[in-house]
Length: 152
Image 1 (cartoon, helix red, strand yellow):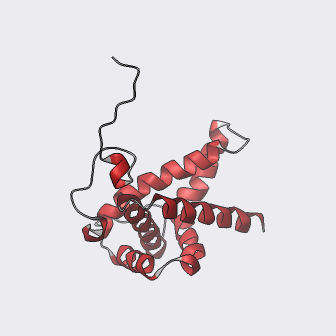
Image 2: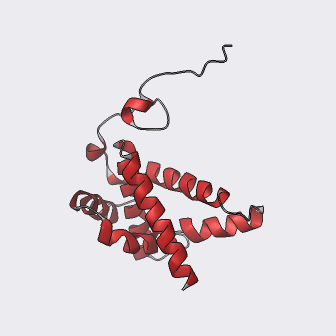
């Protein structure tokens, strides 16, 4: 096999990490489908953030990750982000919050769960639409705000 990296096309054009373009434009995807990918993208962002921190003990990483990815934490982050969202992003959040997921929350109340789904839908929308700079901007801001409120 060659040492040259494979360029399969598509990923750079769509702004996604892998060369699997979505079956339809992000604005036409159901909010639950956006939340599905948004959940995974957010999880990777949090893990990458934690690996950039000085304490890399597995137990510590897990506890800190849970503090940022739980439905309660995602709901809190959405509240912290609301003032910096565009009208379009607020519309995605509204759709995500009102979407019926078909499952009940395990460790959160229904309102927290709906807000967490709304945040994941927004992240999924930005990722799927190739708006990676805006995605990084919001996640970076949100994590910083979460960390600041934790220290207060």
